[in-house]
Each structure stands twice: as structure tokens, then as C-alpha cells.
Amino acid sequence: MPEPKRKSKPYAAVARAAVEIASILFLFYANLLMGEFTRANSHGKTLVLALKDIFTRANFLIGTLAALVGYIVFDRLRRQL
Image 1: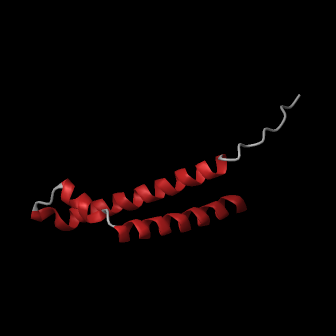
Image 2: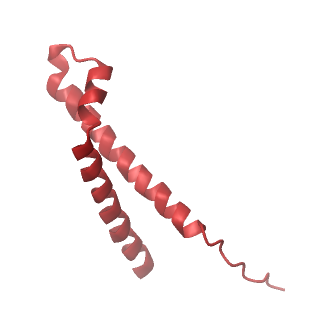
Image 3: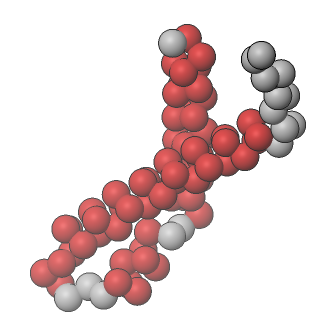
């Protein structure tokens, strides 16, 4: 006999969204960090200085908005397929 269909927990969708948004934000900051070292590597920039340059309020806002838009787009694509 087939097993009864389980109802997903109410926080599962929120947890999935948070993980996907966090992974997009991680990729954004990784890309910024790589750009900082590519651009300023010859000047002897340290990791601490590069991290200080990329973790700004403006970058966080841009990254968060991009992550939310990315999540919405990919979620709609996932539902259509």
C-alpha cells in the first residue's frame, strides 16, 4: 500500500528560502572578494583590508536585493518546470 502523503512542516518553505538566499549572498561576497584581490593584489593588500572594503552597508543592500530577486526568479522557474 502506498504511504500516506506527509504534509510539509510550515517552516520548511521559509528555511529553504533562507538557505537559497544565503547561498546567493555568499556567492556575491565571494565574487567581490576575488575582485578585490585581482584589482589590488600588486599593492600588497591583506585579507583583512579586503574584507573591510567589501563588507559595507551598500554592498550588503545590493547583495540582499540581488539574492531576493534571484530567489524569486529561480523559484518561479522551478514551479513552472
